[in-house]
Length: 159
Image 1 (tube, rainbow, N blue to C red):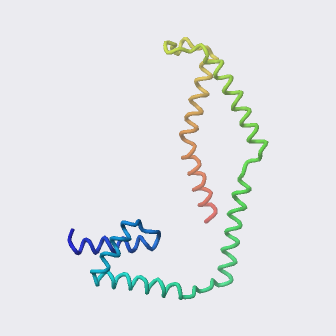
Image 2: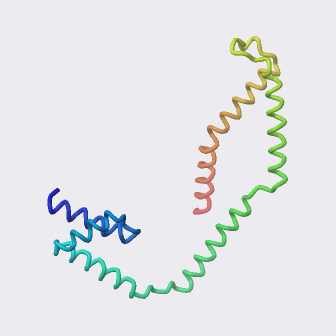
Image 3: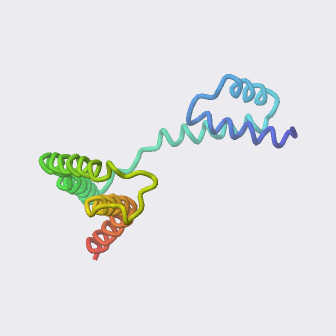
């Protein structure tokens, strides 16, 4: 490995070490390299100086109006999400309908085998196949429909 590549690796490890702990091998590599490389020692010292300067710099306060509007916006987003939640009774009703439909489909398709053709299916069996196909198509298209509805709602809210 060349000295330049090695310095680049050490700089990367120094930067990674700011976000989290370095592995013992990484720490040993950095410390060993810093002992012999003035360029990387200067880089580490500059990074430490920048970090100290940033820590000592006071953050500006938000203007009261911006702070108030931001808090109101955050509260309104939370309210919309809570308002969009479905009532428990509706979730129970959907669960019951799903279970009853599943039992009906299972009974309608109980006699179906791999050799069964479309003409062999009763009206009840054809209905069951139709319901399964409709549900599969709904599940497939639901993300597309939801995305389009959200986009339309966002566009009308921004207008």
